[in-house]
Image (tube, rainbow, N blue to C red; front, side, top):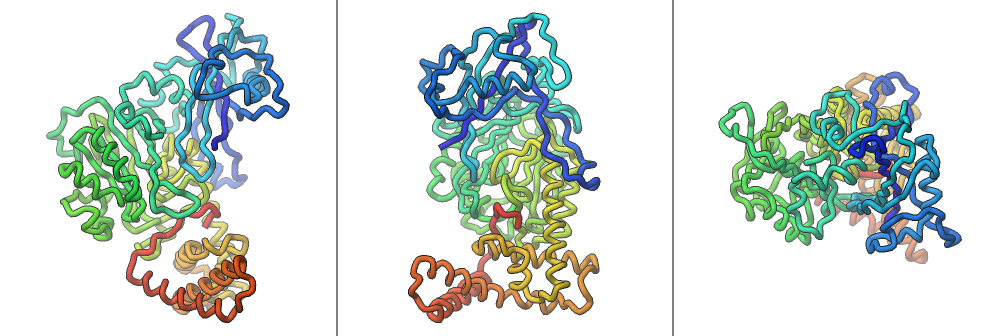
Length: 531
C-alpha cells in the first residue's frame, strides 16, 4: 500500500530546455533563537501536492495523454483535477494557462518505513503564454543548471530537491544504480548516492537498514596519493541486512567494481550482519571502521584486516572525495561520512527517519558527546542528511535542532521528576515516559541514565540525589518493568490468569533477560516516540 503525490513539469514556451521550479516551504520554526539561528538554505523542486482518491467516481475534466495506456498507475482512481488545480495555484496559474497535459513518469518509492511509501505521478505541460514571468517563489531552471547545484555544492547555497532528480536527471546519468538487479527498490538522491533499504534485525518502528552505495563512473587516477586513507571505485555503508536477504546482497556486490571500500558507522548487528557476505564475495574489499567498533564485531562477520579510522580522514572513490567524521554519542566509536561534492551527510544512527535515536549505554553511549556531535553536524551545513533508518531528510539543520530541543526537553522533565522526589530509574521513567508504550521503556531507560550523567556533569542535580545509588537501580528497574509489561500483555490476552502467577513469570523472565544482557551487547531501539 502507498500514498501518492502529483508532481508537475511545466516547460518554458520560450526555452524548451527549462522547466519551472517552486521554492519549497521549510518546516515551522521553533520560536527559540538558539535553534532558529540555524537556517537551511532554500530548496527548489518541482511543484507537487498530495493525490487523493476519487470519492464519487466522476470523470476528471482534464485529459492526461498517455494515462490510459499506462500499466503502472490508473489515474481514473484519483482526483487529478483537484490536485492539479492546487499545484497551479501555488504558481499563480490556472488550468487555462497550460496546454496539453501528458503522463511523463510514475516513480515508486522504496519502503523506508515506518510510514507507507510515497509514489509520485509526474505529468508534463506547456505554458501557453510565451511571456509568462516567474518571480519570487518560482524560477526557470535547466537540467544542466540543476546538476551544477547538485554536484558542485557550496555550503549554504540554494539546493535542488529530489523530484527533479527522480524525474529528469537520474535517467540521463550513468549511475551505478543502473547495474543493480531490477527487482530491488532503491532511491538515488543526490545523484550518485544510492540508498537501498534492506530488511534487518533492527527495532520498531523500522524494519530496514539503509545500504548506501556510492559508485561514480569516473575512475580515480590518483592511487598513489597518500593523503587518502583508502582508494576505491565504489563504496558501501553499513551492510546490515538479515540472513534471508544475503542473496540479494551477493547480487549487489557482484554488480559493483572489485575495488570496493566498505564503511561501517558502528557495530550494531543491523549495520554489520552482511559483512560476512562481502568478505566471501570480495575478499579484497577494504573495510574502514573505528577500532572500538572492530573490537565489537564478531570474527564470523569479518576476519580479514581492516583500516582504522578516527575522524578527519579522506576517502577517494572514483575521483570523488568523502570525509570521515568522528560522531560519538550513539556509541563511543560512532562515525559519519560526508560526501564532499554533494554535501550529503551520512549520519548512521545519530538521527533516524522518524522519532529520535536511543543511545547505547553498553557501548559508550554518551549524552554530552551526542550534543557535541549534533552541533558539529550543524556547523557542516549539509544539504541532505542520510540516516540509516528511514528517508533522506531535506531540512538537516531543522532536524538536528529538533533533536537538540527534544533532548533538552526530556532532560528538563527528568530533572523535574528528580526534584519532585523520584530517586530510582523506574520512578523517573514511569514519570517522564508515562504516555509511551511500555515496550519502549528499556530504550528510554538507557537514555535516562545518560541524561542523569549529563545533568550531573552540569552540576544541576539536587545535592541530596545520589547518582551512584541511582545507577544501582538498573536491575530493579528491569525486573519491575518486565513484571509489569508481561503482566499487562498476558492479562490483555488471558484476563482470568492470577496476578501472582504473572509476577512470578515476569520476575523469572526479567532475571533471565538481565543475565543474558550481561553477556551480550544490548542493541538499543530506534523509537518513534522521541526517547
